[in-house]
Image (cartoon, rainbow, N blue to C red; front, side, top):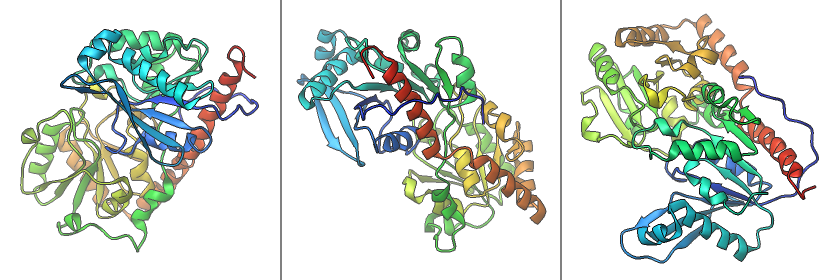
Length: 389
């Protein structure tokens, strides 16, 4: 596990409210924020403020509130651009809506947890609040990133009491920019994905009807994937079925490669992913090597391991570093299909050794453990803030 500072022993802080600003859809793909926030909500009431919806016509600013998983309340800001401009900006207005909600609900001394640096303006007027920045992605490297994102991140890095990062590369990129940076690579729910080798788990018909071997990926299909690699490996192994499970984002579906042996099965629920994994012979991570993938630490690496699925990946740094003794790494289409061939031909002894290595890695990365370690750091920082304890 990547090195991070050990959490100091600290008394338990009160169950302070947690105001989270999230740039991802709660119901889109179940990933790091949902895993962490649902666990933190076991003790802290969580108000999760989603990306604002800029209404096309004049619309009074409001927060649409919806209770969700126990302890988590979702809030969708809605307003017109005219109201945002009058408030000084989109997140300046979001901050005013949050402040009104805090006052209405009498949320005493809340802490703030930000996933997007764009939301840094919501901290105005809360100089004594605990602030956590969970950097799960290098958002400035993504397609269509707003130009102000970098300057907002610099401000947030100066302001944050704690900075958590979703991988070693993100950690190294933030060292020296804040005195309290901690590396927390994304984790896994082992028991959930272990259902992939449960005899009672049924492979969905959309996958079960395909011939073997089936080589599969699940996750968002966006600019981080090497679409040309997918096209070439499908051509190199026409008898293999190349399966893509997940929604598309920031790419035109019409631009995706089409072939008789490439199958797009669309977005699937988190609860159903083990059944799809069960039906795959090899899992893959065909990521492009570009600015948008320079800092990624794919959560699915551990999820594939928890299902004990042989995996092939392009040379993503945060996969190569900790997992190259388990995951086969390939940097060209020819090398990729050769690695898939090798995984399909894995001997019983090789499979047993891989399973043992996977089990050793997985023991370090349970989401419950990660959330507890984060919470210990938060409690210590919360109690150390002025007028606390």
